[in-house]
Amino acid sequence: MKNSAEEVIQDLLKSTKLNIQRGSDDAFMYSRIPFGIPALDDLTGGGIPKKRMTILYGPTNVGKSYLASQIVVNTQKEGGTAAWIDTELSWDSAWMSKCGVDVDNTLVSQPVNGEEAMDIIKELMQVGIDVIVLDSIAGLVPTAVVQEEFSYNPMAWQARFVNSALPKILPNLKMGSAFVAINQVRSSIGPVALDNMPGGLAQAFFAHFLLQVRRQGWLEEMRGKTKTKVGFDMEVRVRKTKVGGENWDSAVVPFRVEGGIDIVESFIREAIEKKVITQAGAWYTYEGEKAMGLNGIKSLFIDNPNKFEALQKAVV
Image 1 (tube, rainbow, N blue to C red):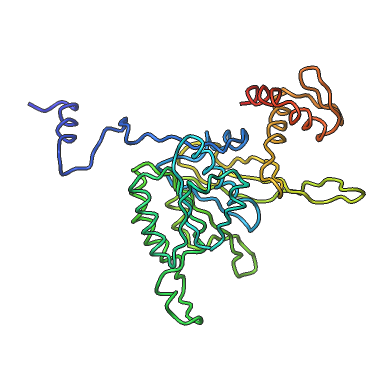
Image 2: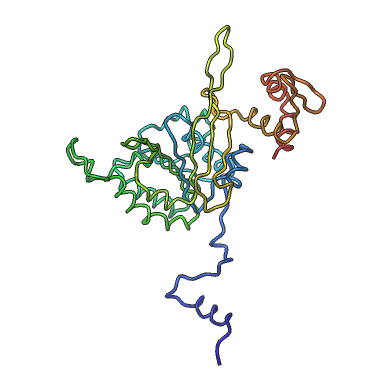
């Protein structure tokens, strides 16, 4: 007599030779770490996923490391653990503290070569560190290149290294870590310049979440009689997702050089979008109170924390 489908499934699940589980098992479930910014959390479906690899990439000085730092901040707020693999020798405790990172409880490593970096990442995954930031893929240099003369430059050495290393460490994501890798872009040589990421195409293949970060426009304020650049609109676009979110969509948030993402202004923009705050020309109205100009409505919430808390609840 032929076994039923359930009997076949039970026999396979009992097998010690096969790595098989039901598709509904908890082992396949994953949580998310929020950015804490409504527009970005809406875009990404709630934030950066754990048990998955996320790549933040874009040109220099567009806020990639800052976004990664906010994932660390929100992980630590929930009592989680965080590690930062600094292949660029750019870790700055003072700046990270300003971003809100608890640097005393952040594990930092500055590996001497790519192999050491990957070994450390693998070990951190195996012990279940909640979020691991690699800053950056472009800084991964294998020993074979480090030990050669400066003129040594074999074809596609970094792409070959990344291509062979990622398949060896990614299975360890099952232990629960969120792996956030930062990368830059390089212009290709040819009649049409294309933005390429150092490390080859394999990284985009293995990544579950690919977020492009770029500058959209400048934020300017009057300082005396001079208009001064104080930041820029940061655009984050989902270029690839296997974990939900708004595929190919983007979100724009205000980024200020002196203080990172402007949380108050981000919520104000979201509130205007959702009609919680109404705008008529230069005037903004919130629950019957009027303020002139963006700085005016920002001052209303900065000076009245209870009102800002109520705005956050209304927007989220």
